[in-house]
Length: 184
Ligand code: GLV
Ligand code: MN
Image (cartoon, rainbow, N blue to C red):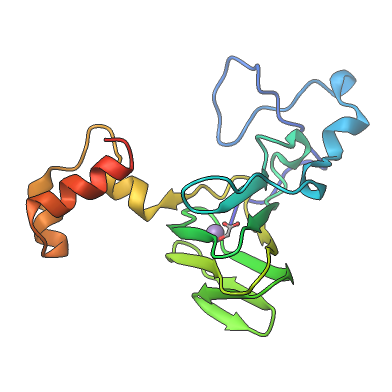
């Protein structure tokens, strides 16, 4: 989904003072091989949290060599019962392969791989007995992630309860309760 590149590479310069679509390129004499390797995906993430899951993102922010290349990956770890909560990626379609365990995947599933079209809400939940491990790949250097629960219930400023009670057809105390779980 990202635009085509106009040069072989453009390693992200996070310190540049100008702001462009993506990140400006580091000067060529500062580019080195470390910019093109990332070892974060080999490490199991910490799943001790309210959802029992962890996402390790190999996007441009973690991996400056990805800048302008239009791809990225995630490692997703699931404790038993762990949930990757409903979310969407505004800038990328996603494909994923289940490496270990058994996941129920909402959107489209075919054996151990699935695909999620850009912008559509999706989730994965570990329905197996043990841990599960998933690798996902994106056609964007920075897919973005809009997590439904946090965008709706933990935005700042917060969405008026009147909107949420009407949208979900529930009482005010239900909305207050959900907002309190997400710290707002
Ligand atoms: C899974 O949905 C992911 O965004 O890595
Ligand atoms: Mn996703």
